[in-house]
Structure formats: C-alpha cells, structure tokens
Length: 276
Image (cartoon, rainbow, N blue to C red; front, side):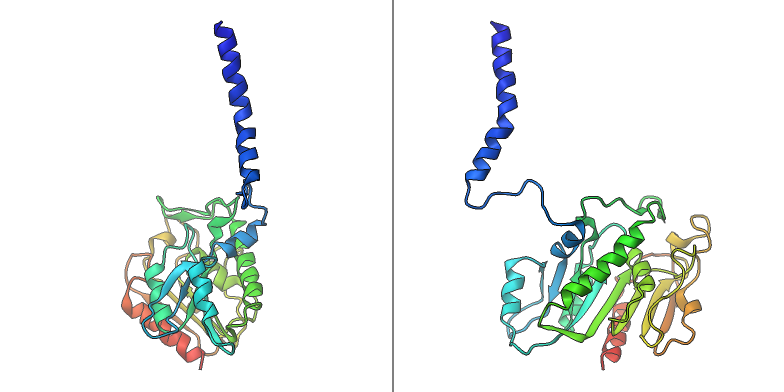
C-alpha cells in the first residue's frame, strides 16, 4: 500500500513541471522560461535611464530603459528634438549611481547606463571585500563590447543628438572608458581609475582631439601597492598632446568620487564646455 502511495507521489512530482508548462502555453502572453536574447542585448535592455524633465511640472525620471514611463516621456518629445546623451559605464559590482544620474539629468542630459550584470554569464572581475581586482580579465572585453553595442543602439534613436554623446566610466567602467578606441564621443570622463598597470589595461586610447577628464584619489585603496602591481598613479601620464584634457588627483583614501558636489560640478562643467 505504501509503495502505491509513493509511486503515485513520484508520478505527480514528475508530471508537475509539464502541467505548469501546459498552463503557461495556454495563456495569451506566455512567460518565457529562458530569455532568447543574446547577453549583449540584455545589457542594453536592462539599462538604467535618467530622463530630464521635458515639460513644466515634471521631475527627473529614473527607470529601466524598457519601462512604459520611459517610452511615454520620450514619445512626448517634439519630432525634431535632439538631446545630449551620457553613456555611463558602471563599476565592477553594478550600477548604483541614481543620485549622480539625477544631477546629470537635471542639467539636461539623458543618462543611459547599460547593465553589464544582466548577462547570464557575468563573473566579477573584482572582490569588494578585499578591494582587489583582475580575477576575470576577459570582463574588460565584455565592457568594451557593451560600449560599442550601446553606441549602435543610440544611432537608431531619432531623439539623440549624435554630435553630443558623452562617455563616463567609473572604476571598472573607467578602465573601459580609457581603453575604448572609437571616435564617437564628444568627450569622456575616466573616474576612479589610474590608467596604469599591466599592458592589458594601461593607457588612454581616445582620439587625441577628444577631451578627456580623469579624476582619482591619490590614496585610493583599490590601487594600493600592497594590492596591485604598478597601479598607483593617475591618468595624467597619458594626457600629453590631448586637447582640452585634464587629470585631477584628489587627496584622500576613499574610492568613490561621485558623492562630492565639487567633483560632480567639475564633471558637469567639463561636459558643458566640451559640448559647446
């Protein structure tokens, strides 16, 4: 008797997943069990966006790129609208820069931050607990591809001012901002990165006539000699011959530079001047 009950339970357990699939397939809008889109498309689809107010009474909108609220606000734009866009490359643990995005949006910029962590396979290149990095170096290639893919998507959007597309990269994203070789950007900001270290990550590869602003602290713990090899320094060593470019080295032992108003003001002034 017990064997019959057990066999019945086993059969039910076996059939349950198939019953669930049958129910899902009968719905008008079936839920995809596996998103069929390539990883690189997911980074764009899951991008975080900050939109400036377009009408009186509106506030900055911070949402996902595919949210209805974003689509509705963009749909309210005049046909001939051309907005400056900041492509934001986040750090090694994810986006998390909402307050910074809102400040940029209030200044009139659209901010789009592709989500590298939306990839199905996305190991960390860093260890936040020990403040060390370089564990999965192929991630740097991921980040460069994400920038290139985002630019391709931006070119398809009628409301983007293609002559005023800027790049801001922070920490791991700062590495990508420094290494990206394309000439699509009006200017770029490299934050929380030194541009020094192994040949894989060293240097600035922006065109010489593209303005570059770099900001880092002189005692950033992530680049301490006890944790890295030859990464203590700043991007100023690679600024020679670059027009309207500047390397700022701040005092202090904190990694984050976006939490201070003066630094944000400096970034905005740089972007505004580069966009003139």
